[in-house]
Length: 311
Image 1 (cartoon, one colour):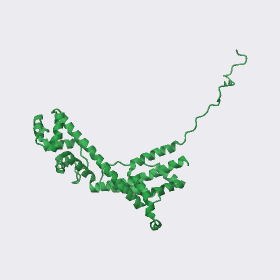
Image 2: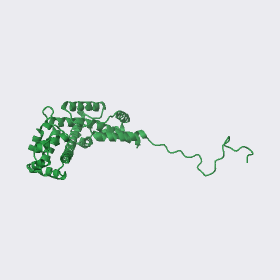
Image 3: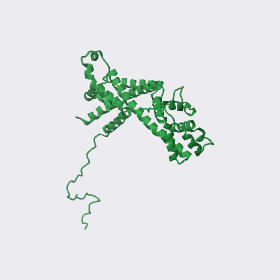
Image 4: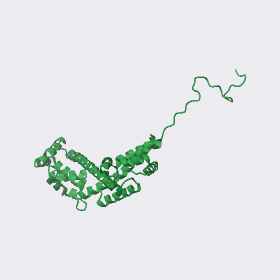
């Protein structure tokens, strides 16, 4: 078994999974934009933060948040300073904002809030020692901590979606990891061609939210790249008519789906590492000295040798 062959197979699989992962990511972004999953997840986080979905909806209607709307669609992200401004203006009003703000008014306003809001805000006010600037910092940290949890919710949701999309794509295109690995292992020209194309790989695009048009273009570009690879995939008539073809394909499809659920960044990093090992090659053995024993080396003729008759 040649180490170079193993590395080329790893590079080939990593590159194929990387390109297919881009297709899955594009479909996922399309569904996220179509179903407005980001804004819905943000609303869920605000509802947990403020105590109810009704309070979250009212905050979305605040002027500071309304400016973030895009074509009457709720935002998928709220800057910390806008959230803090909206909360202080809605629940504390002039007590915390403007020239009439004062610690006494804030204390009185906090006592009138619903319990779900009064408890954390009074704690922040007490910890700030009635300092308005420090109090605002605590409110900002409160929001940022919640948004970290919201990001975790969305990442887990995305992971499940990618797994489902990966399996669906593997079945739809008949991309079988077992068949692909066998082809890479036994077909040297095909393996070399994939490894050569892998040299032109670029980092995956970021996951910044875009519109439906951006997601569709991303899917089209990634799929056209898959077609250029000339992979052993697709449903031929012989494959459809072959008995037990579906049963035999299940393990390979599941492996493909699991691989695509890892995401394009994972396969991009693995591809770079495998390519680096392949480029490094085997280090040559260090040169051994010409004299392996401890005997003194005879003097060289010439200037370094002592002149005849010298003492």
